[in-house]
Image 1 (spheres, rainbow over the protein chains, first blue to last red):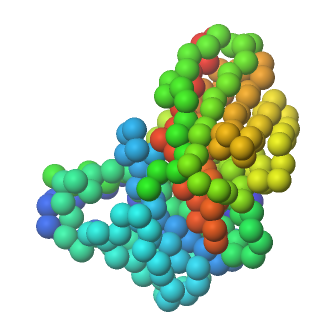
Image 2 (cartoon, rainbow over the protein chains, first blue to last red):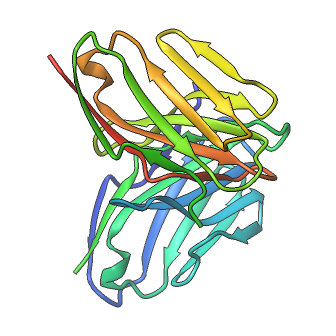
Length: 114
Length: 110
């Protein structure tokens, strides 16, 4: 079974702090994704990566950056956390090959910025 | 940008009844997927239907796709309390990205 793990289930940070959210997948997937989920808005794509050191902006990249130094690990960075970044963050991975690829999700990190 | 929109936003039914959720989208797609999310957890893939398919079944799930109307429906038959969750449609437009809708919250009462 594909396993996608996220470093924390719950995280509380203060405004202005630098925040790292880590995601690791164990199925050698090329694609990895970071989403944020807010009530009534569904999932919105922040960034995705299709290869090591490769990244592309999603729909809402402002205030975020990412790092992919190894194939299995994709990090989301909040350079200076703000209260409007309080949200549920979901990481996902999928295979690159083929046109119809399901995504496998981690359990999510609920981030609160005070 | 939100591609899929689910309808209804929330649905409450009795155990044993069928649950139907609808998804509408705006642009051409090459596939549509449905996912389930239990409270406070990650999403789990349920079923994928390609743009050249009209209907697909998986256990108690039945998905239809009408590309002329840009809509899909998910039917869960003989629902169980364990089906209580949020359900999301996601459209594959190009590459490997998906665009998710806002979801339908399903509550199955026992």
